[in-house]
Image 1 (spheres, rainbow, N blue to C red):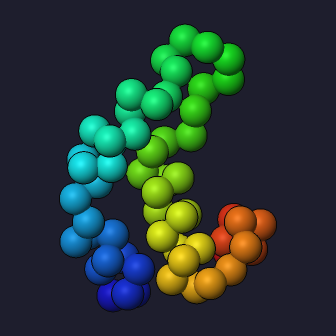
Image 2 (spheres, rainbow, N blue to C red):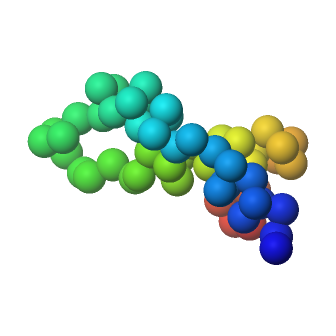
Length: 58
């Protein structure tokens, strides 16, 4: 299995959902990206030491 798949399955994503959900607006403007996606990209950014743009391209 891919190491990132293994890591993702070990994460307790509900912790991030509970922490960040109050910061998201449910009825204002464009719908937000899923919290799991945003946290996952941030983790990848730090693991690979790349820019925001680079992690999204990968």
